[in-house]
Amino acid sequence: MNNLIRVIAIDDNQFIITQLELLLQQVARDVDYHGFTAGRRALDSGLCDSASLIFLDLNMPEIDGIELLRIFADAKLTTPIVLLSGEDKDVLETASNLGTMHNLNIISNIDKPVSLPRLKSLLECLDQHHRASPTVAEKSYNASDIRIGLDRAQFKAHYQPKVSLESLNVIGMEILARWYHPFDGLVSPGDFIPQLERAGLSAELSLQLLTQTLALYDTHYEQVKSLSFSLNLSAGALYDIELPNKLATLCDQYAVPRKQIILEITESQLLDNLPRTLEVLLRFRLKGFPLSIDDFGTGFSSFTQLNQVPFSELKIDRSFVQNCDTDSKKQAIVSATSDLAKKLSLKTVAEGIEHAGELNYLRKCGIDVAQGFLFAKPLATDALLNWLEHNLDKPLAEWGT
Image 1: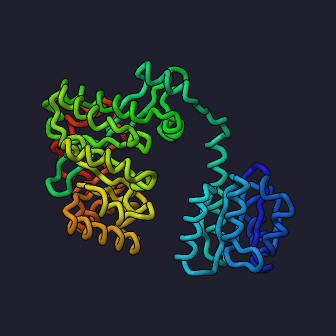
Image 2: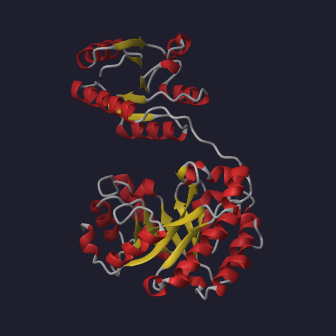
């Protein structure tokens, strides 16, 4: 690494502090290294904010690593953090997940003692990240920007394929929003959905996306007639008591069967004012729309939602799907969820599939539908039609299973 980097190590074991310093001297020429055997001393030094990298031990007296993660989160620290621990692997992974929940930049977990190859690899990745990701000021959008975008039809539907693991065919698409901004180019949902929600415009976006999809169904009937389309309804949209009537009227205008429009609701969205959202969801079911519980297992009341809301489909969150072919805990969760869904007569969809190993395990578990980058990234309309021409009847074996 050619640039000066400031490395902070926080560990109550002086041996680890010294070992890290000696190892760093072997793999990096320009290092400003500071080791602390107590978390309070590291905080009082004021060096954490300006550090290029922080090594943090979990098990320490007075202030342990878990408490430091919370303190870093409260300070909105963006410095990359590597967790160190001699504890059980599960404890290390759980702490890493906690840091991520705190919106901290947890880049790795390392078992103690630290090895030279592991440290070298870590610093090389950090160097590549800094060179490939120059600091760019974040672009923010306000309610007026989004209002203009909606009025000028700048929001477009993209589609990600869903593949049946029984018939081995493409059976549906998830509808995803993208903003084609006239000056900023393609804007991803993470940059506008929160603002859209706060502005109370989410129901309008859902209507626009559905209208575009129904028009696609109408103009390319032969190519898409066998497909279902899943539309994610945000929390704000569920407050619109008239939304079920609006979506039903749209489907009728385009002569699209309502059963082919699946409405996805993230389970955490149901916690806020459940009676009102339940009323809206019941109206959707009465009008013939299937309901899917999205990101299942990531909230705190999954079983309560399954008992109270008339869902017809359950989507297993990508956090449980990724590496499920090798992670025994994820295997247990996926398998148990599949068994539960079958007993409740719910179809199961696994999202976030990126390689064939995951897909093969999901098939063994009896999952019904698969979705993820293994098949395709979200596609604009023209790209979707081209993709369908080549993949609509493609045997699943050609996906690498």
